[in-house]
Length: 465
Image 1: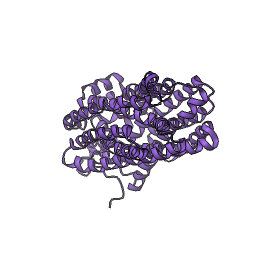
Image 2: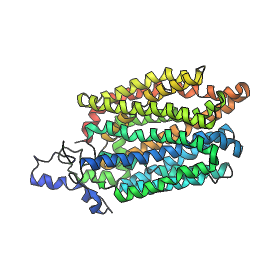
Image 3: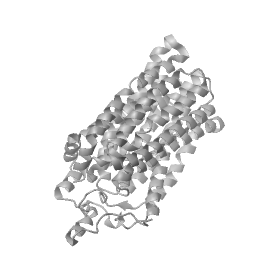
Image 4: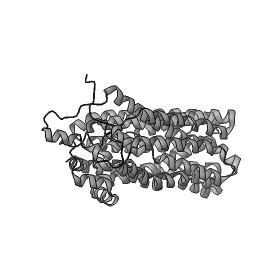
């Protein structure tokens, strides 16, 4: 077994080999000594990087999902409506998550991505803890704005770094592992928030779940080495031309390149729809079980955390592993597999809302999470493989901008206001029927993902030449 990451360079001429060492030197305002180069890190260290960034993802989603379990207590304590609750878990978080994401990612494409991740993790951890001090809707709204602004700097820089540690043919599996962190975070957030809130209240629960992230931020800052950009992508040992460097520095050039990439546009649309549906369901499922089945917060967190978390995590890993094997035969197969998973998730998600018992409903949530998460790794891997290395963080942030505003922002907010609208006729069951609306949209991202699969091979080839 090789002990270090391998980059094909044996056949290079001395002049080409010199260019192979060039990428980091083209980065403006960067301490070049911090840049890890091919061969400088062992396989063990690469796995450490994957594990560390996955842990960061755990804290990202643990802080985010804990609030969904705490919503019944927060709603009662602060006397909020479903519409206001929807704004807290929707636009208060998503709008600033999206707005801050693009400038942060632009800096990450030019500076030290590791530092961006460490600072962002510190900010969102502090703001999660401060959420527990809110005395009214607007104070909690501003705390959620802070969480969103902090988390905006977590995902795109991390995914960009992983592309420079992992070759393209193995990225679906690695991104599935990295995305598995969000599932672990979801499970921990849901499983811990309920019992903790019954012991110490929802306010101190926010503090207890927020502060540990600061320690992880210090570990990221002290132990994560910044890799040179694009070292595993370009055929000629990642030889960077002046035009390519200019693209990485110009916002307009970046937008032009991305707009011309059909796969990127399709994946962005699929991600937007996926986010709308997924966040509408996951943010409101806890309240649904508390109202329609009368479960306590600790029971909701445990049952839903295990059911949704285990199903989603298993789906991501299965999707990533199958995609790694499929990509070696045909680069279309990972996305085709994801589209199939989305289609199969439709009847399971409908059943979860209409099931006669909690047990059957949670079992169908498990199946929904499993099937709906299959495309997670392939979508991310393809997104970062169809754009040039110097604009990956920006490409990810643009995708997140639209998926956050339209998907994460509108999804929970739409369900909250629809539930308020139906409450006069359906009473406590209004939320059950409001959740049926996003499920009806599930065929759309599946069809878009199928179209992206057909366009991906040609766009991947262009990005690597």
